[in-house]
Image 1 (cartoon, protein in one colour):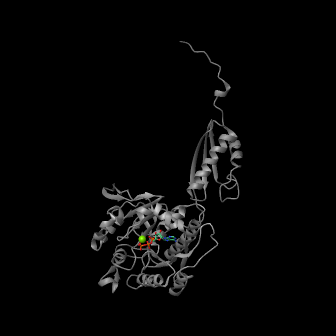
Image 2 (cartoon, rainbow, N blue to C red):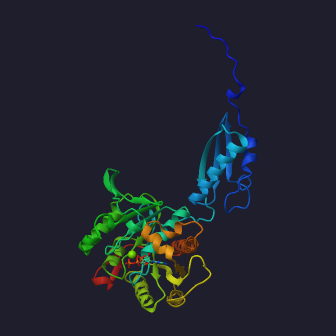
Image 3 (cartoon, protein in one colour):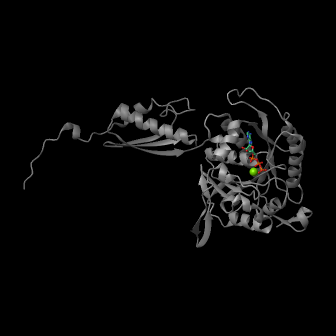
Length: 389
Ligand SMILES: Nc1ncnc2c1ncn2[C@@H]1O[C@H](COP(=O)(O)OP(=O)(O)OP(=O)(O)O)[C@@H](O)[C@H]1O
Ligand SMILES: [Mg+2]
């Protein structure tokens, strides 16, 4: 056998992509929310070429998934159209959020902050607020978990569309642990994963406390910046059991503007702030503050009265964290299993971004100004007298 040199067609020769040409092409792309093109804004951290291959290092300043996806698609399309249709493009994306405060705090190993979402009255929107706060925190780049502690009516499996899922068992450091179910970048454990709604009643009392303890300590939560706990309504045994087992960073109280809800919210605030319990109240959120039709967001109808929760917060000397309007899509999104704050460009996304920022700010200042909360040891009946562990 002998070889002879075959003439190589020029088109088959691997061409070398020109880095400068690629950068010039990328100057035609602007990322949503940034005035400058992606090269000028610093989003393109590096471009490397090897023959037909090009590696683009992309740094984004927003954790929003849709913006990342869009930017990656635009880069690929632009290089293929303006530089070479044969380019093989690889994009390494990284998110660096400039205004995301560094979250300190140490509640239990791996979990920096535990936030209870409570109310006095039932049905005021605790679960809705918990779900939307969680996705909003995740969008800001925080790692988030939800513990659904509502033994009477667990809502998180429905609100996150994971009703048919079950936590699996994993082995961590030789111990068997349950792995939270994950949906929309939020880790979730709910008493609803272990029981059908008709069985809820058997969870009352010590069994419920034991199940909650297992969901907290025998679970593989990994590293969390925030664990949100969706509490049942009222100020009952479960609340005491949770403050006894967990060092809660603080609670957020949800209320609607009606007098009855406000009176119950006040009881809730008093319980957490009582000397015996002494869990910081991060603030009050007013849910169903006014009705607004989504297509006419400037029209606000204060059907349950105006600013009741804002005034209550002022009276009690706690922060007012914001108001959530009644919007049909909130209820629909909850039932459908995709929290409304995930919908890009919606009023609810904006509303929850504001509230979430306020909550994070409260946590940051709480951690700067107060010592870590310790689990409370109740020595006598229902908080009549209590000492710190
Ligand atoms: N701002 C809102 N706009 C429209 N619907 C809302 C709003 N907030 C809550 N809802 C709806 O009201 C109902 C009750 O809300 P949710 O389940 O969050 O209350 P809850 O306080 O957790 O109730 P429970 O005390 O039973 O746990 C749900 O159907 C929810 O979708
Ligand atoms: Mg609920």
